Length: 346
Image (cartoon, rainbow, N blue to C red; front, top):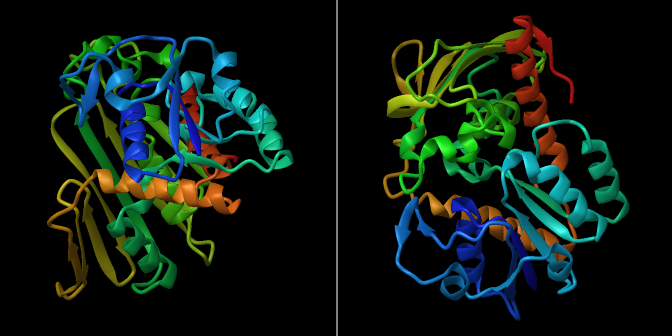
């Protein structure tokens, strides 16, 4: 199996490294690169080495058509978010199965065309939402589906992080996450939380979103956003879901709570802990993963993608799923712009 990598920043290198570690039969890697930084990045740190090409052992191309002429079986699209859709279209038109990093794209323009090509050419696609492979989130998904504690009354999610700490090897103001033109900003950059919400509760009905007051980050894209979604239980009763996303919080936190009719669930994605306490203050469920290895999520999603390609079956996160969180993100932006409640449509 021959894999084409497009974009070799931090996440692109993670996928390339994991792909090499799979040691697939007759596997090889090639790369099309527009920028030629040779920073070798491991877990957000720079490691020694003369070049990416030598370190990872791939064949490099500066011309897209020449890379395609190598007839790759799969492609990993890891360039800036604003370029995802155009790149995916070029890849799909040539009948190549592809994995695209989150978000799927930053605009609905061209999504229907991509979906049509994927369907007609029977292409296997996957969007990089590795949190769906988190064992704790999978447990919570089962709890909700089985209605173990009744209907959902309300939920609240928070992810506060500090953008300058994400890639300490570069000026954070020059990275894609800080630039609106490249698909940056806290909404698209932390879109994992949007995917978790719609995966657990189904696509929300609507949203009202607001930006926070200016922080000290000095970036052009939004850095703090608070939103409230309206979601539906199976019986059509409505419940609110609050979401707080921040790029300017030095003390990182990533957690959420779900109030059921009969219990309260709390999940901490930093400590990898979840607990459920009933209304008599009795803990009825608890799970903590003490030795959690974050890269396991990326390996598991890669295994799933490769397995799906080899067996010619759909992945669990095809572009249709990626479109749902995109719809939520775009509705949040629209709500901020118009300061109004915006309906969310797939």
